[in-house]
Length: 320
Image 1 (cartoon, rainbow, N blue to C red):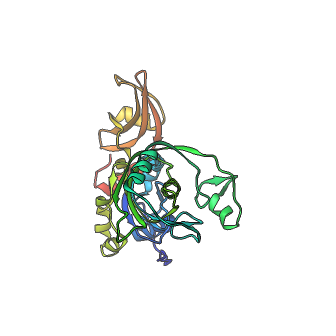
Image 2: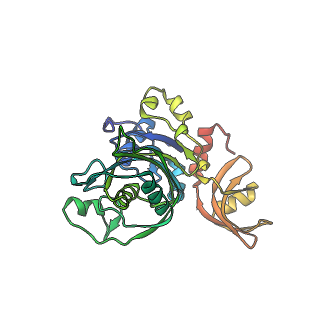
Image 3: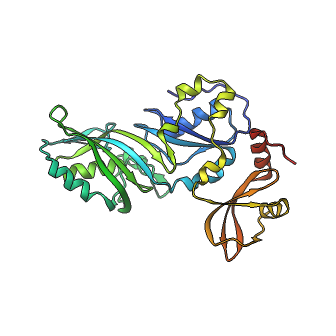
């Protein structure tokens, strides 16, 4: 399923779409398709999902792209199914089978491995990943048959629980739920768990069910979007500041708002804070992000006056 190529008149669109990414599309293909549906001038995503993964993919339009990088650091939750006893070149179902082994796994074995892979763990990023080496994605080297040395990285598995299996009916399948830090490769986790179980494994299913404060029950499918009219689609967009969860809100009067938007620090009785979302009071508007140090509000990423006016117009807020 590819994004249509018909020419459309682009327009400013601002906000966040929580897409339930379908199987088989890359994150960029999903982004381009959504951008076409919304006729949006500018769009970006907050981190990729593999084509074989489904689930929560926040897409940013317009002003929201200014803050998309912040969401890369968000913790994630995944559902995954490990196919035990079969290793593949890519550690998932897309790769060629490179080894098969018998599966003799007890509940005690699984409990041991779950404990082993919970907490801070070390991972070697897979060759079939978008991680870059000398400006080139690792998967490009892999496709050329070149193995590149990768440094192990520390990631955190906050929670690892067995949802189902293996069973007598499905002795090769192990379904897990993983809560993890940014940069965790679930394919690698599945492959490493398979090795620790002594039988090898690859990922046969992967679904992201949460990223940061966004959950799968908030997401919408392409089928549902395509069935809507334009007004319906626009109502599916979350506000730009939905990306700023956990930020302390500071509201400025019109004089201070104008100076802040010009990049000038403001002084006030604010406590030190690392993450601040800054608003104008009249008319109401998100201005950008900042941090507070020693009573100074120090600008971070700022929206342009044009972005602010367009967001206000989209929300039906009269601008002055």
